[in-house]
Image (cartoon, rainbow, N blue to C red; front, side):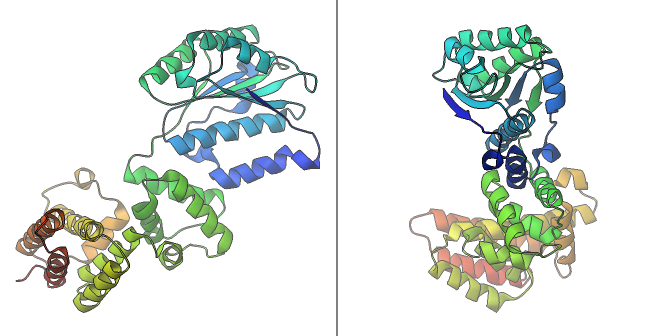
Length: 359
């Protein structure tokens, strides 16, 4: 257990810390069903932050802790690692110390807690129910099989649970980007938001950090894709999407030049094929929607990508789309087989896409 005494002066101004934390997290309330700290302290001093995206889970726990520290400026911050702590460690953390009568206890890795530690937390929550002077406890718990048991235990004992979203769908990630900008009083162009999700959507922490940096460095409102690309130029995914955009726009010569430049800079051919395949899949889905073969819901393409694909449909035929998809499959095979020539395959595929599948 680690105790940190938070002084009630300008050196450790919790209001300022909270503002910094909100700037860091983009106010996590926008993407979660957040349990109000006021409700938490009125009923029970305990709160479980459960599951969801790992980055958001930690940020939500951190935000809850600092809100409590702001509310109780005489409190100590005590961090308890449930993987190694026992019931005695928890009792010590919530008890008065020489420096403070109460603490804000941050219990990490609650999914790996010893059963006796969990029993101690539940007992403490019941004993201090509606006690305004009690130490507050924020538990951070992953949605593992053991974590689900912890969540069920807390719910059975009427301890508030904040369920964190997973952000595992493209639409959720896109909404997260919009909400992060909105929380800072800023806007972002749909194309720029999509670019951020395309490149950093698999790493929410990196995505949040990029948004913070963009808003700090630029006053653009709305933020546009050229600004986003200034910071993402070195990323292989961005290079791939640029090559794909040129090819889909019929700018074959420029696309081939961009391809060769990307390969010279170390971009893997498979990353470029992935970007081309994504654009072609969107085009195929847009064509299928227009023909009434599938619905927008079943296509599962976000509005911006669908509008872009619709704008590119002119001159394409179903045979042309099919030919390009087959060529992409061949190029993918060339990249993965030992005797293949991925560079030739990529250039050949780009030329076919630039010609809208006409051979």
